[in-house]
Structure formats: C-alpha cells, structure tokens
Amino acid sequence: MMVTGARIAAVSYLNTIPFIYGIQHEGNLRADLLLAPPAGCYENYISGAADITLMPSAMVPTLKSTNIITDYCIGSSGRVRTVALFSNVPVAQVRRVFLDAHSRTSVQLVGYLAANLWHITPEWYDLRDYSQVAFAQKEDAFLLIGDKVFDHEGLFNYSYDLADEWNRLTGMPFAFAVWVARKGTSYEHIDALQRALTFGVESIWEAVVEHGFDKKPYNAYEYLTQNIDFVFNAEKHSALQKFWDAGLKIEPRSNPG
Image (cartoon, rainbow, N blue to C red; front, side):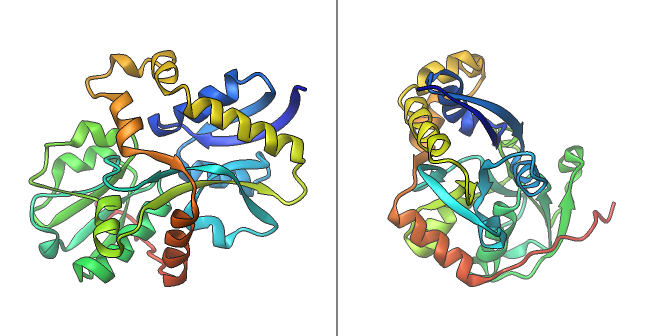
C-alpha cells in the first residue's frame, strides 16, 4: 500500500543520499522532502514544516512530544571524515575555534572533546563566512562538517576527526543524526520510512550514481561504506546517552572579524 503525505526533513549532504534515494524510489512512500543542512533540519521540525526529521542528535533532549524512530542514523564507528577540526598548530595550542554554523551536534561534540580529551579552553566563534578559513591566524582552528570537508583535506598541518577522537576517548561509536517523529505520527508513515531507508542503505552505489557523486574527485562510495555507519544500534544509543548526560552547551560568539 502506498503511503502519502509524509513531511520529511533530511540533510542535504552526501552522507544522506542513500536515505534520500530510498525515500524517492522504494515505492511505498510518497513524501514531501525538505533538504537542508543539519541545523536547518532542526528548524524545519521546530517550525512545524516537517513531522519526521533526520535530527541533529545533540538537539534530541530539547524536543517535546518526540520519539526516536527507525533502525538508522548518520553515525560512525571510527573515522567519519566529514566532521573535522582543522588547524596549523597542535590542538593543545589552539586559542580560537570557529564553529561551522551548519552544525549543532558537532559544535557540542567539539566542546566535549575540548573539555575531556584535549583539555583546552579556547574562545568559540560562529563560522558563517567560509572564505575566512583561508585567512587563519596561527592559533586558529576551524570545525567544518559535510561535503566541504573534502575540499579542505590536506590544507592544514593538523586535522582531528571528531568521531575518531570520540572513539579514542570513550571506545564507543557515535551518531550525529537520528530519525525522529512527533508523537501521533502515523505508524504507516514510520513503517514506510523504515522500509525506504532499508532499501536506500542496500542501494548505496545506485544512490551515488543518481546524485552524480561518482564524478567527484573523492571516492563517495568508499566514504559511504567505510566511514559512515547507518545502523542505529544499542551501542550508539548508549554513546548518545553519555554525550547527552554531559550537558555541555557551547555558545559561540559572533565572528570577531
């Protein structure tokens, strides 16, 4: 039976294209799909524009009348590659960190690592003008997420993969985004989404080709099969609980210019 009318917000990055492919092709789900960076997915959900959302995991504890749904997430069991802190000095010497405005989870995660692994207390700044990365001062670092990370690999002396650093500290995997739905969302929509996501995760190469990522200078298929772990299991849920329980809140200041 075809299920229609679901309003779904998802992330507009390479790491989500298997999900998007599944939603568009599985056949049992016809959805209004809103694509945005992670912070935009949160806004789409809060504003009521979407009832089902691939939600930045840091925001889940702030949500009311919401359930985590499906067996899928955007996660990693080791190096995730597309959530990284770049600098020209070792992290212990970093004084200012510019935080990708497209992210919420990664901002809080870098704060967790600064406090618990790197033992630094930098000044935190909002990063919205990405051209500023080219004008880094010596003790600056930049948190970048998503596809733009591929363009910055190798341009800095030091790169810290946040999922890898989290794993080094805790021995646990991490989930950057999980699927949520408002309480009262129909089971038909949730079940259809679960089937669509399963289909998408089983069709990664087809998704890569359809979205044109097979023509990129980096290996998108390798990234999606070796860096991203789509299964939301008990271990990832425990990792998020540890992350949530820390209660960290990094509030970046406006860019100093």
